[in-house]
Length: 628
Image 1 (cartoon, rainbow, N blue to C red):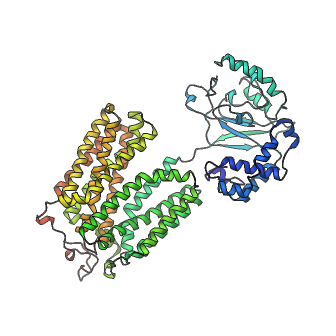
Image 2: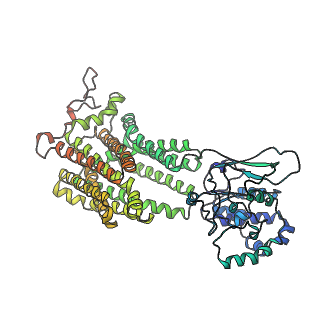
Image 3: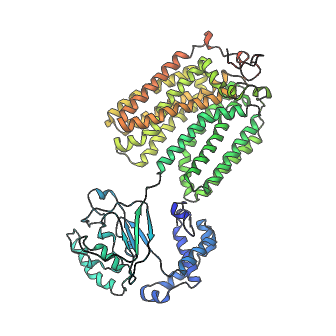
């Protein structure tokens, strides 16, 4: 029983995956079906249980159909599980716990779990101290070997290290029969144990596992007869952790963004934007529907690659269509402001919304909702009047020519070179915040996990404030002034962040202020960046340039993300902040030097007719060289 398709679940006869928080209803449903089919040992219940009538009345309403509705499990699975539980003659109960809990007392095999106490040999059984090191457990496999000759005995466990007697007692061995040792138990607790021990143990018959537990508690020097039937616990390497899977998935995402986007754009260059956008949404919806059926790590990687490749197709195509839908500069600027506001608001709200929805929905329902969102997006695109900006002539030239066209236009246009430098200046503080915020809070300031959300919220509030004020500021000051000012704000704030990293005693409020300003500075660059792209292109070159911006900006993160993590891990937060501050300063300086002032000759837009694009501007000899 596990909501996740774990390795154990894949080998189970029946896998019950209840909605989180509904396991009690599932247990009641199993009891209902066992009682309804009279799969009950009445003699045992009469001798050892009380309240059976009340239990039977309580579980009457938990039919398999009702449990199916509550837990999101097929009713047939509930019936099959109840049939297996009620029809078996003996259950092998294996428990792993760090304390001798009530469940562990009733288990046949107890696997002691390791905690921080393994370093000192302290077993966290409230006040008990183990005299031997705790067995560090890992993913284990229990195998039943061939029985030896002689009378059958109870199963035992073997392991590579001594096991504390605290983790091996069963209900057949009362607490007062423990070996004498020094203990810090209070007199009241010892008195309660002495009073309750014989009374609790008297009516219980000796369970088959009691002798095995007694042998494990015996001193190690005492010889023991080899068990005729042995359960051997063998270690095997642990599977890749969630962190490794997440890191690989993010790497695949960046590969799709940087390498796939230009290729896909070149392949669909001859198509109108509507089918391209709808097709990308359909692919993303299909990948979201595949998520509930994933049970292998490689499947995660495959779905992430296809999903992000579709996103790398949709986003540049969508961004390049907006200038044609809103040709007026004021309308386009307002659209960019609202788009940035929606993006930042989604980044803040979506994690909390997902957490709230998971409290009432299953992961499968959440994935279906994600797929539904992509379907709605496709329907909106299908019902919206879009100008046909891509013509058949726009698909001329080789695939390689169209793939690299956007990057070559970036290199040939001064203001676009400045935009690329500004992308690098944005990537450095963004990597510092997203990668190292948790380290600042946990290791430097000693804050809680709740404060992580507050710090990231401060970083998200700054961009929203800038996005709201962007239309009026851009109209008064111009795109160049706003973006270069934002870069200067980032450089100065990164210097302050570096000082804070070496002298963190200034406090929690300073970090919030720095993160707020860094978020505002990034928004001063990102919000008007599409205006630069629009002004430097025409309807034929625009899709290529927007795709190049999408790929090159994410390529900057391929540099800064590992830098923030690796340098921070090896040299500390101060070293990471220093390296990223240098990158921010270099990007800011390069952008200021490369971006010509308004009115100068170099600031003129590259004439679309003089750009050797895929529009037939290539020479009659078939040459595809880009020239200005």
